[in-house]
Structures are given as C-alpha cells and as structure tokens.
Length: 450
Ligand SMILES: C[S@@+](CC[C@H](N)C(=O)[O-])C[C@H]1O[C@@H](n2cnc3c(N)ncnc32)[C@H](O)[C@@H]1O
Image (tube, rainbow, N blue to C red; front, side, top):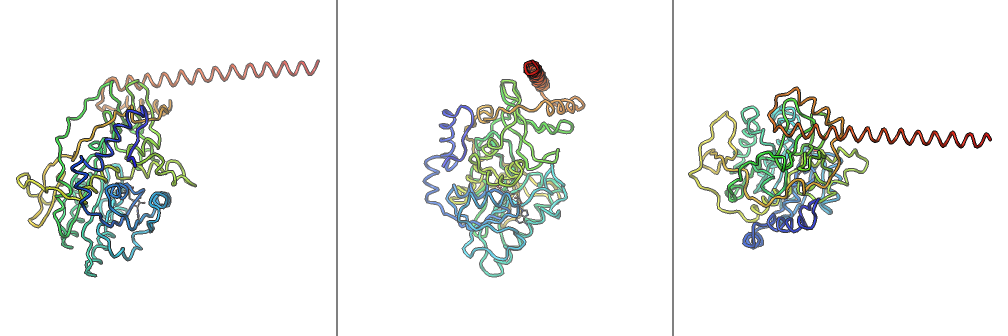
C-alpha cells in the first residue's frame, strides 16, 4: 500500500513515492531486513483522532488492539479505517486495557499547549487529559502487569509554555512510575512531504533505552530554503497582522483551528504566480494519508470537520519511522553531546533521563532526509484564493510590518487583479445574457400579441 500519492505530474511522482514508501518503511534493504527481524508490538491508541500514529505504526508491522476517541467524526473514520479494532469513546471511562498491551500511544489534546490555542497549560481542561494515561499506567503497575512502552506526541510550544511545566508534570509522573524516557522534536519535512510540521515525540520505556528509538537516526539537516519566485510559498491567508506562518516550497503546519474560528487551509503562491488553496485530499496527502482517508467523517458533518481532523493528526511517515525504530531500536547516543537540563527553564529540543539524571542536547529535527517533491507538483488543487480573501489579506498586510519578500505582495496584488477582472468579465457576460434573454422575451411577447 502506498503511504502517499502525489497530485500533479502523477507518473514521475509515483516513481518517487514508490521509492519514498519503501524508504518510509525502511531506510534501505538493510533497514528492511532489520525490521523483519524486529518485534511487532500490541498497541493501544488513546486520543486516536484519525489514527495517524496507529496507521504509521501498523505500516511498520505493529498491531492495534484498541482505539479510544471521543469526537464523533474522528470515531467514524477510525471505525472505517481500522476495521475489526474496537473503538471506545471517552478515555475517562476506560477502566482497563487489553492484557497483552505492550505500547500505549497518546497524541493528547494540544489546545491548551499550542501557541495558536488557549495556552491554559497542562492544567487546562483538554491537555490535563494526559493524566488519564498516567492513571492507566499506574493501575497496570499496581496490578503487576506494567505497560513496557509509551509514546506521547504533542506540539513543541509545550517545551516553552510556562517554562516547560507541561513536560515537567508528565515526566515527573513517568519517573515516579519507574520509566526511562527520551523525547525529540521531529519535522515532517524530513520525510519527503512538503509540509513544515514540528512535533515532540516522547518515548517512555521500562526495560530498555528509549534513546535507541528516538536518536538512532540522524542526518545533517539541509540549510533552510531561501524564498524565491521560482519556488512555491505557503502562507496563512487568515493571518497577516501579527504573523504569516510562511514556508518555502512547503505549506506551513496544517492546523486543527485558525484565527477565523473554523479550520481553514493555508494558501500557496505557485511559481506560475497563481495563488491556490489545497483541497482536503491534498491535505490528507500532505499528512501522509491516502486520499479520502477522512471521508467517513463527512457523513452528516460539515466539510470543515475534515480539516480539523487532518490538522490534528500525526504525519503517517513520521509514525512509520517511529514504528520502525520501536520494532528494531538502534544505537542510542553519543554521551558527549549531553548537558544537564536546568530546572524551571524552557526544555531543549531533545532530552532524556535513562537513570543517570536529566540531560538534553540540540539534536536536529531531521532523523532522515527523504527526497521531496516540489509543492507545486504535489498539490493537485487549482482552486484560487478568493478575491475577498486576497483583498482582506493584502489590506492586513499593508498595515503590518511583517518581513516578507517584495515579490510576495506583488504576486498577491496581481492575483487580486486577475480575480477582479474575471469577476468583471463574468458580470459583463451575465449582463449580456440578461439583455439577450430580455430581447427574446420581448420578441416572443410581440409575436404573441400579433
Ligand atoms: C491531537 S488529537 C490526536 C490526533 C491523533 N494522534 C491523530 O493522528 O489523528 C487529540 C484527540 O483527542 C481526542 N479527545 C479529547 N478528549 C478525549 C477523551 N476524553 N477521550 C478520548 N479522546 C479524546 C480529541 O477528539 C482529538 O481527536
């Protein structure tokens, strides 16, 4: 099964994605053979959303035994895409896990921890639900059937919010339960997808070194691309006063919400000068899902629901890479990189405590570097950003002093002119058609009168 498919220029892209998929599953033939010798874990997915984590893990050979998701539309997606796997609703009412559970995965709600959200912190109504995972771990420990592995996922802003309090709370609980832990910030761009998306992945383990899962793969991250009219430029058209959320030859992080209250896609200035909005199917592929993955959510629901679900998900190839390393951990780490973690400060991009205290380092966010398809070839949609949205964005931009390339404003202004001209043409055509309809009606009326 292909993890992602591309939009434009299908034939050549499929070849690239074939390579991508085989590399996504395993970095090379060596990695593949290592993986086949690796273990297959029994997984419980809490806060499963549309199952980005669990889908990636299953592509790496693990087995999902139970899912838990409260949201009705996400629940419907899980039921369809994970046929035969029981799906429970509310984690607060979950009083037991399958006896053979070896790995719990939990991309717990981030609304209180993200920059775009309410920033209420780990005590906020949504994000405090991570305490339910701790409750389940504790009860299994008390029953002398502890869960050997846990994987958490959340937004990197939690490393800084309230001097990293959220992580402190989670990690202290894990340490008290006897887990070694490690975390790392990972970027979806490393996996061949044109989406800039950084997320924190934290692995806690009872009997092994979690650094062998998270830190074994490292590459030299390519330098950031410089904006240029010959490359696509993704941006949030809903912003424009305080930020732009731009990305070169990529879309900025797809989100579950936006400043206009409903989830909305970022826009893209293409090298051709067109300004387009990706479709929901493009967004699914930008997250590594197959097109239509979230269509079961649609039944009876608003289309914007699908945007929220996709924006909240874990990118599938990232989960697949984690799955590969969970199956077959590698060499942990060079101890010489380590620096003790300071208390009550923002956390570093990667840290661990494997028994000798808390240490951190600035390991890169790219564990691998898969070949990437240019965004303008990846996105299939040709839907233009509307005249109204473009005009509003340009007006906000003109009042701000946000840094951006000069050609960006020029291209948007040219797009606005094209949209206005198209509207004028449509109005003129409409008026012409109305005129000729009125003429034929008058002619018909005079013929009847005769
Ligand atoms: C950040 S999303 C997880 C996304 C998921 N990892 C994926 O790849 O799609 C958090 C999810 O937690 C769910 N959630 C919130 N409260 C919950 C609860 N009490 N029980 C179960 N799920 C809950 C939300 O509906 C949301 O889908």
